[in-house]
Image 1 (tube, rainbow, N blue to C red):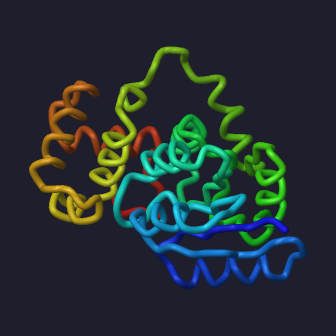
Image 2: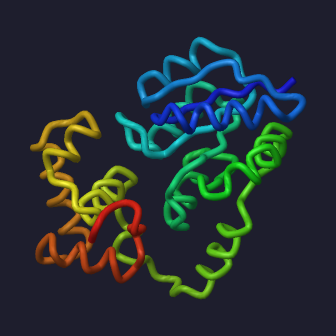
Length: 216
């Protein structure tokens, strides 16, 4: 029996995932969490084989959360389930320690296959994401400006480009507005951008923000 933990801040999503796994044989959902802090507490309290993890929950940046979980529970396999279909997010998630990456638009059809493969020690990438990886091979070898950012800086960049204010970002990341402003300054310096409007235009040009994430 494969023991599964589910971490997502939307109750309906958790219910749906639980229903799908319950309908398939060989899976048992042994715990659920709805934010970063409760996810960390959950993996400490419950023994499990696979964690199905949303990247965009209240609290810590998703990639940073993956790193922490792998440090505390190296054998726990992590399957990222997210709305972020951009390959930049997938690359960072895998580098942090994830074993699979699945977008929510394809979850119902692929979830069982993805959890099965990850639990068995394999790596799972959806077909759509695999195609994006293949396309990225044609990109220049030199790092693009946003690829020089840390995981937290990249997350802040995405939120700024999606139209969130400094105060909103600070609240969602559980940090001060001053800290977010510092990140913004670093982002502008590293990417050599003169102002926030230039960051937004850059994000639009490189498709770093999907339509669902905000009106940019």
